[in-house]
Length: 259
Image 1: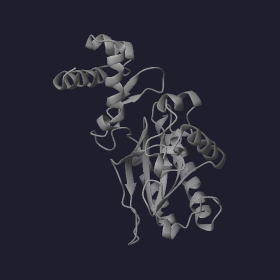
Image 2: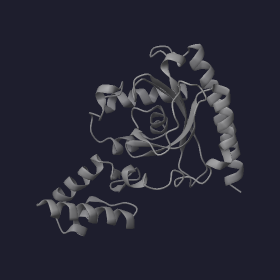
Image 3: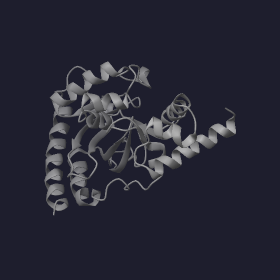
Image 4: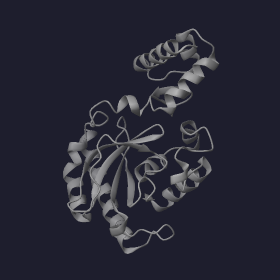
């Protein structure tokens, strides 16, 4: 397969994924007029670069974050304005950067945020994409999935970016996600970037809207989280504020979006 032919086939697959919600391996092979092994290699390459992602609803692929992130940051949701005041209150109560994020295959994408007013702070990262199994907001969202759904996203045991994280394998990730479910929130201590720590909790949304995560992040030097003890004063205070804000936002969204 020459380079131009490969590019042509990859572009045809992306065009197909824009027309159809889910592209199965057989459908991709039929569209290109090639065997399933060739179609699989193309889909796997597109997935590796974020242009496609595995579907949670069954066998097949959807457009990935590299394609969807080209849309405006609010394209996934039309309700962030409904809870913007609550996010402002959370930022004021914690003093740290607070953000919304959505899950896109193996990635998490930040869609809206309010930066801390501290001189040493984490800037809001709307549009930024990070590995979901490493970011706190990604783990919070992954923890809402069933085992089958999780393994469709991560079909292999080794996970990318493993050297930087406590979840270098799918088994380690599944163990960490169980801890997330037990605690009720996810955490990240200097895994996405040295010197940064974060907490995140999922905000349940009404049917038809994608679940989103609310995350609080700041310099580890100020937050002072510890890996083995999630009950430090700083983490306890931030967790309480996060839970209260999440409950308030959920009630508001349920009231306004279901009527």
